[in-house]
Length: 141
Image (cartoon, rainbow, N blue to C red; front, side):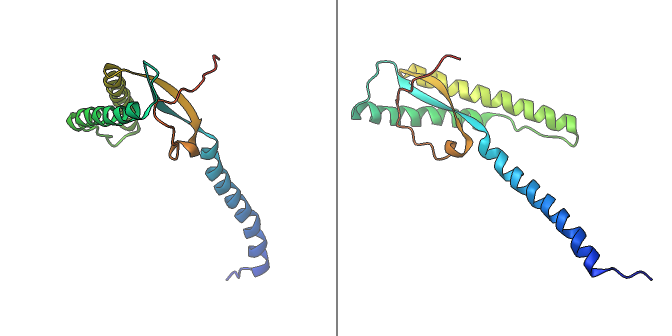
């Protein structure tokens, strides 16, 4: 019959606990460093007054409705039970998201807006409160 030595288990537990805690902290910190791409719409005529803002809100709602209609009519994507099925589902979802983005861009273009893509830190993307039609200077890379 073997008995566990309490001193030995406590000392072997401490290094393991530090590794687990360090891994968890890195796992939580890495997404904070990633970026996300968001769409920003600007008017072709450059107007930024209150009437233009109200018109933007109306046009944005209409175009989001068009995207929602297209999304509701799309067939479901099934993942399957294998890695290949999951990869195919991921590719199909990416293609669908690109198509829905193009519907939004086309709808807004018909109403007089151009779209620019902005890269923002991931933690800012959810709370990003850009005023509509804000002109943001871009740098050529």
